[in-house]
Length: 94
Image 1 (cartoon, rainbow, N blue to C red):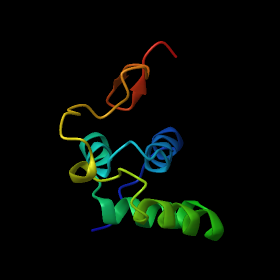
Image 2 (tube, one colour):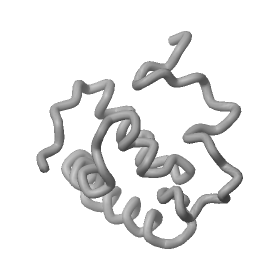
Image 3 (cartoon, rainbow, N blue to C red):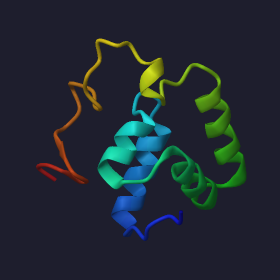
């Protein structure tokens, strides 16, 4: 599977979601249709090597909740309740 072509804004949003510890890979797949392995490839190709290694270490350390299975089962949403409303890939009121 190859990474679909994303415009700059979409790419920035995917990287932002991947960098955020509380946003699970499932949310990225839901919004953009790319699974975890493809997100990792995208991060590797768009970050400096040191930034990518730091991100991977954090994601695999257990501190991150990048997988829905690691999250509290009471959490049924992809975003923080204080975060702006997101519709698809567009942030409202921007």
